[in-house]
Image (cartoon, rainbow, N blue to C red):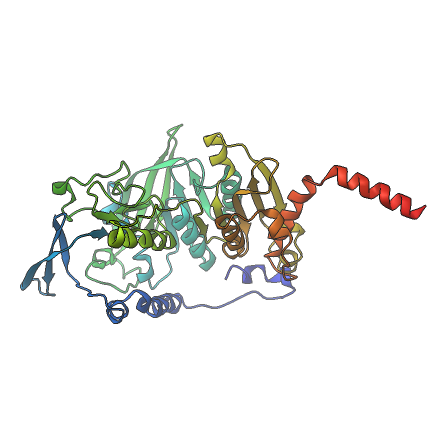
Length: 454
């Protein structure tokens, strides 16, 4: 949808396209169904794992009480599992803020937005993190009038200011209204008797969000510094304010398992909790809430739980990559400039702009850049930030290099296919090499060739 709006750039006279939003969302659901077997009960059962679908309560460091509740919640079968080790991997849930009037508005989260079957004319997004930015741009591409409200000064706060500002500029150019440093105060709703405004695929959990009458909804928000008031009309609101660790109802308080300030379960170097034989992994443990990080942690937690009496493995967070799937994408691994400055780490910066890359030029995807931080005077990589088309794929080479201690010289000496976006990695390494050219050797070479000419 986004590319078709740029049809004239590619020599296409008409860039109109018809779509059925309901069918698009049905496709999302069908893709989810195809992916689900990868983490299904059936799959793990065939691998030899006993899967019990029930409510769990940690009764002691060596006992877990499970309550198998049937659908009608009348027949409850309880039993106690005994064990040497426990791993808590309960994940996290979307954060629901306490905004007066929110209960009267059609609100969604990143888990329930896919139940929509009719495109909102006016979508309000609360939160300027990865989820908020990704979905704000996606709905804008379909034609929703999107307003994004963020309490921070910059979108995607983990990234450099330069990255945040670029994404904000792109959003605004695409028609998204971005309000930074604003806090929601209340939501006002005016009811009018009309036909239902939206169609939903509903569940018992979601049914409260079904709109039975046409309503006018307004968010009242205030600037955090000036107090200036803004009133935003919306048809639907997406809550993208982060995810809260699932720690309630597990019995953690009685056991004395410590939580961090952010609400995650405190873990040590081996992913153990304050009770040594109880481990924790994934979103409920932090500090990163990514699927690939959860998988990474889970290896350490499992091996330490099984073999900790013989050998323990310290969890390794040195090379954690991530990407935000906006357009252009934003991908990062290791340090960025903001973090390096905050930690007092000295670095050299090498930058390569994508408007110089042949593949980016051919694809009309020249918006973006690579920033590589290295140890001063050396090619050792401290961190990389990539903004651009397919940044999430391009970053993989740097992740491998950092994991195995390879420097920019190795990347420069590797053949890259022409023309590809991945060539930008080699050109960035070339920029570093040019800045560190051996002047003495070049001077000797110049004298040699001058002698040869004579």
